[in-house]
Length: 505
Image (cartoon, rainbow, N blue to C red; front, top):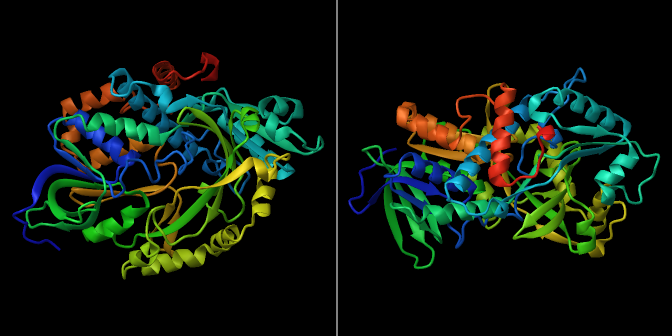
């Protein structure tokens, strides 16, 4: 419902809510494409990238579908569907292109501060899972996006690839793994901070930390009035914007509901919390150098796929295992216990109830995860590190994820694992809901969002020329053009200082 404009409202072109990787990416794209646009960014915490984008809060894999088994489901006939993996791998290459542009343009000085080469591996045990991984490998290696992937069931090869995982393991155990060396580790917290450091030096861009958005209303003239509270002074002010992007992680749903746009009707959220086991023993950390993803337990959410993960955080190599899933009614790690009940409205209660009924195994799984003891967590770790001792690992709280629930004609409501962009019909407000693989595919998501929200401007020659400068493969398909894929990866690897060879492509 529209209202008369407040005379005291300060006018800007763009308001970005949330200082994470999504707002940082969108803000940078807008600033490059439309340098004269005024941008104001509001973040409720007193630092950027402190929620989902923080290195300890997200998966940080640089999701490129090289090792994540949940992106390659098995069909009823036994074949493996790699369609989603292709889409994600292509989107990640676009992200690397954009990051390469930022480095080449001097906006980011040191690519190694946020991205490094780390092999990506899938690892399974048991006859059925080995058969699945073999079929997955055979299907994927036929596509040029995944060329360079190796497969083995040989214990000697596995001991060379993953010595820590193979220590103390039964020689008769049925095991298999794939490995590809073009994988990366991405510190999205560091990347986000670098993007904002550049942005705030630009004319017309303002970053407001410790500022919480309390309301979003539409004025009669079509502009959006964003009411913001300064959490340091407790003072409120209103900003009038032509365009609003809600990139507040788990908090996006609650803010989207405040906007009142009909496109938001029926959307709900299901929060999933997480924990890591962080290795504290440098000798053990040094024995492992890979991101090793396993197969998720039946009924578990995709974000709970177990992995033994080499990370580089603040220049130091770290080793994490998990995540262990859990349930919390908070929509943000620093959120409120009332977030979930506050999100329930008349227009989404039916989809949420229907999705709940259809996902009872997930609910049981999360309850069991919450009830886990230290011994239970150690037992899960020992499936991947048989020689693990609890004294070498410390429990670390991970980030909060809110999975999307949306209306569905057949079921009433469905729970989706992924990201969803919700925009008003006129494109003046947009929100990003959901979780993985959002951060890794942030560039393609934001480019699509700009085309959706500014369709006429996105067709201009100037816009398209600049976009191709930032993302040379734009409007072409890396997934369909093998030569383009090779050239793109070679260029990105050189600029981002990634270790790889031509044979890896």
